Length: 77
Image 1 (cartoon, rainbow, N blue to C red):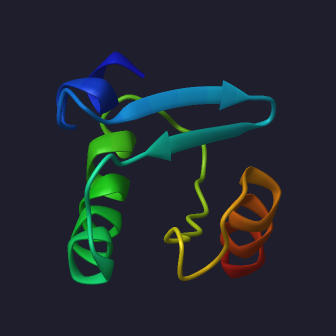
Image 2: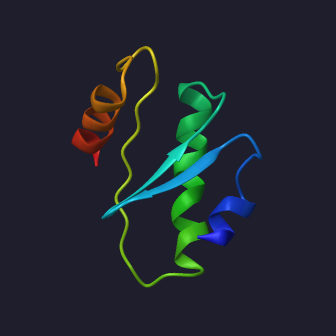
């Protein structure tokens, strides 16, 4: 996932919580998040044969805690 990290801002965080990859964007609005999600499949397909689903959640709109945000993002994938 080094390629993924190279395509993100230094303030963004990539986490692995099996079986999920989680990317935390430090500062992004809905429009910016949608643009990132459109780019991610192309970035990931360069290094992986796996398939990917993407879910998104914005704090505080979609929740204020980890469980709420993860549940919202997972429901969209």
